[in-house]
Image (cartoon, rainbow, N blue to C red):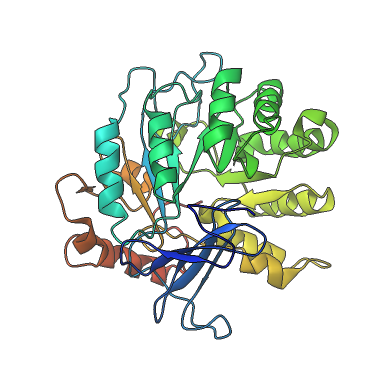
Length: 372
């Protein structure tokens, strides 16, 4: 009999008198579930499967935001980065270098406690350096999240065997960023997917698309289908260019025609494909024009910009912004999570979150700041 926290299949365990409870299904999978009148979700902790709805799953009354706090927190726990083989990424939107700083474990716990005030967080996506070796408290942070039924995720670029094993034993998902070397990318993906005793539900590739990287993206589609090191890869996640940080110069937004060709090529080659939410509406427009695709199922999985609606971001200093790119825009003061009442901020009683959500509504939840 499979058990979690002393629970048997079908048993329910509530969490701290909140609308959240844990349940083990008949297959032995652990779920975190949120129930209220107009906002509900089911989150399967083992693999990240997530469903959200309003009053019922049958009616089209999906909530525009979570009134109980963010579901996902993007949290930068270091701004130290040594790049790949010592070479810094040319399009790092944070302009990170080896001369940065780490978030302490104590600050990390304080931020989680403030943001997770209804025990509603499902995942924390770590802002890491390239090798996962930058912040020595990373593993304690992962363990703390797991103890609180929150799944840690993160993005790296180059791993040794030790850090690959540590990530695979703690993360629910990991993305490997491409930075100019297909071999380093393939070796790193393989180190993660070859872990047998692993919590990793999926390993993805992160690839920034621009006019200057378009040919490499198409080449990557062929490589992942032919190189055995990618045999357990989940998907290639294409990230839209945001012209901030080091990407302010040297890179050009990909044309709509090339964007459409990338989507169609990936589908034709049966490459697992994903996009950041910044490009969700663009992707939807392309896929609705395609034939022989499971359109309804695809669109069901598309989530446009969710910053300060369902997700939150804080930098290494514990300062909150609507997303990591809005921090770089220089147009916001930010909200210090260490000093302020985050619940009041999220509820719109203080700060600028209501104005931001209005901007998102007016732009159909496409980025109101960057031309992605």
